[in-house]
Length: 124
Image (cartoon, rainbow, N blue to C red; front, side, top):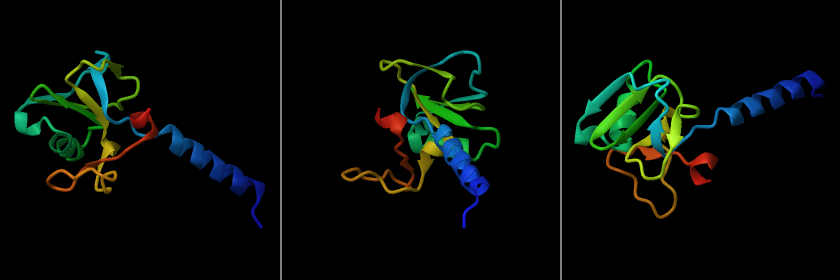
């Protein structure tokens, strides 16, 4: 028999997980409040896979942006740190956007196997 406390704890866990959904594939510019702590100008690092891998191996990295031959690392999540603008060359992603999940049907995974995780925010 489930107690009302167990059910309440489970509901709280689900709402926390939903609130922490990753922000992926957001074009724009950072707000300037929390600027990148590392900016690397290197066309080889200006991809989802390469910049995401750099973020994943940097202890304080929570999100990253790539574009214009640059990889930018941030110690805060994308939400609240990006002014969306579709004409920006910078693509912002939370660290959780890069993983080893299979690509959506019809997409080929990039070399190295890292693929973008789809979220409701990304598809909206």
